[in-house]
Length: 224
Image 1 (cartoon, rainbow, N blue to C red):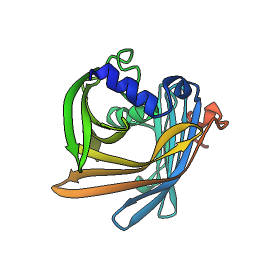
Image 2: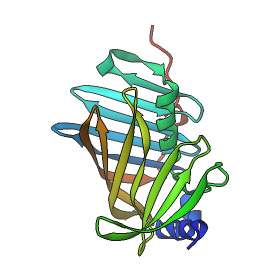
Image 3: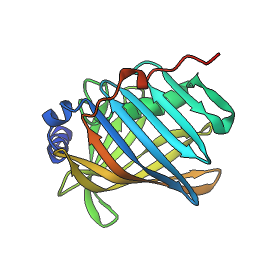
């Protein structure tokens, strides 16, 4: 199968390209765990390319957001209690997340290149491998279940605490929400400082088409 055929099957499997294009907002909530640490989170997406994430940790709320052009964050654990613009490396991750269609959809318009790496076994499941070279030169690998054409794994590099790390994400627990298929479980595996680390994201609720004001994504003015 060609890359375009696989992506067309992927689009159909997750509810259809037109149905996804009609979605203007998505809101999610759930829990992120890393070892003993638990962090409830809330995620809001809005076309085009806007995202806001909130994590509750140790009585504090971390906020990261992107309004389509500017990324900003509130990081009380680092002593940053006022909104501050993101660094270029932080911005890259949040921009990726803001594209809630993902890299495969309209990849040519986005300037990405996609090639087929063939069929591979992923934890006992036959999967098509797609190699993605993004417009900025970053590389990602996607594995689509050979029977259902939904992603079951991705791999790529990202920056964590100032260092580039390889991150592999296992994707599962697909459920239908408003006629669209969403993964409710993601496990990120990486190695930092020679130590393997695992982050599990469990989504508890997803809503589409909710009313989300534009200013939720804009950086607030500093108080005082």
